[in-house]
Image (tube, rainbow, N blue to C red; front, side):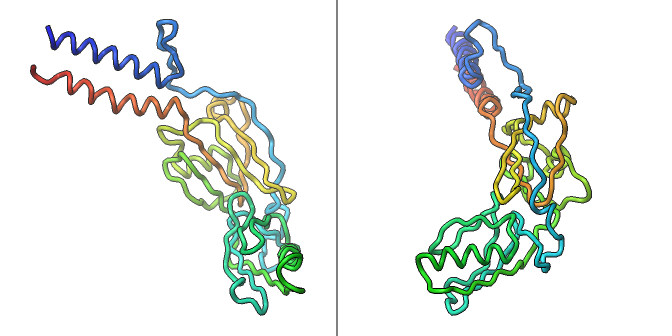
Length: 244
């Protein structure tokens, strides 16, 4: 009798856990849970990135810095300010004294002038700044967040968003199926959201990704809750199965 009552309590607790994890779906007496994430199908088109408009030769004066490029910055006469930095996914670098500066989309001369101006405005008199590209991003895309294998991947020819996600082995068990695509264009960071489920079913276009782009996959609260439910319930049932 005690064991049967305990099992009923476990069953009730399991149902309560599932309801709590899945947005109150039990309010009407039905679970209302769909394991396939559903999000808005709206998506924004992004302009071409600055890296596409630039000369591919990073030794050229017309080359424009791209996200993930590695830069060597030298301030003549101030060795403590000379350093190697990497442009982050949003196209910016963090630099001593002046903080965060946008680098992506600018030529080396433009970025040198920007650093010299910011340093000269408050800290140094007529600083001479040199910037060299130590490593170019080329055709690489960054996949961050809830991917099975987040990282930086080399693009080969035209690559779409789904193909880039496939290189990272797809979205993991807790990832949201609405992903953000970040790009630097016109020296500004621009972000658009795309519904991967809608793209897969043909309801939305599969956009091209370019070198320097960053794909960010956030965690889904519903899918995270489902995974917690899957791991919690077996433990509760094992406790209920013990002899009394």
